[in-house]
Amino acid sequence: MLKLVTKESEIAKCQKRLEKTLKAALSLKKEIRIGYPSGSWMSKVGYNSDIWYANFFIDEENKTRRFWNGFGLSSESEFNTGQNNNIAVEINITEKGINRSIRGAFVIDDRTKEVILIHRGRVNGFTIKEFKAWYPEQFISIHDDKGNHEERVLVIGAIESSDFIERLTDFVKNVVRFKNGLEPVKHPPKKPTKPHNAEIHRLFQEHENVELERIEQVVLVYKRDPKVVAEANELAKGKCRLCKCDAPFENENGVPYLEVHHVKWLSQGGADCIENAIALCPNCHRKMHSLNLAEDVAALTKIAESQW
Image (cartoon, rainbow, N blue to C red; front, side):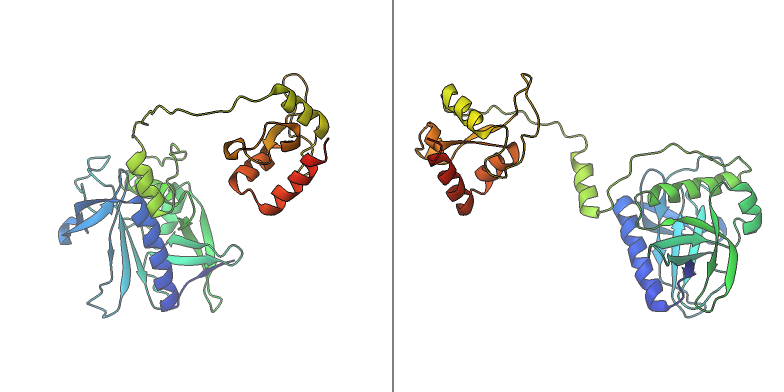
């Protein structure tokens, strides 16, 4: 069941979570005219190539706080509407009770605990019922804490889902199309989802077009006695001597693939002999070179020394 969030403290928490998602995606800043031409003001808002966003906590007339989110096209509209850089969609979220003049709200899914942004009320003077007949996306029913039921609520998306920005963008652009008497975009092209985490997203943008630097490295390797390698593999009989598991695969000759490890490393003066060599699976071989745990060294030393 989807339940409407009505408590002031819970709405504030939902709003902060929404802002976090938006700010991670709308990382650019721009002066945008907020509101309709008859009563607008300029404000610096966050945007990307598809949408912009603004947030205010002001309701001087009613002396109460409201969360006001403006979602609109980031630059000139796709269509010649005469409202370029003006609001395309506005979502007011009141902090107290259920106000039917407020177009946006948060609901929580009892099953998944996801916070979902919804839109209700009128769209450009048209009722939500009229908009529903045109718009291709999902409409739902919600309940409040008192069990009151409300139908014809439009789901924009779960605010922390990987496709929320994409769904919000589709909503904004379809509202613009609705206002201009055009057909809805039923299957908009999919775009790669940006990471939710703001820091990851910032690093992703910084390195997206960075050319990788090529460097030359000199690696010293020890010449190994092939007879020691063959003998260690023969004694292992296709099983790792540490974890006792079968070799993970066979090589091109059908021989179980194991890697020969020197219990006392060659770089530390260990001898390349069967008393110091033992066959391991790739995971255990990497474990020995990464951790070289004392108990593993002791176990392998005992096995290696008892081989002959």
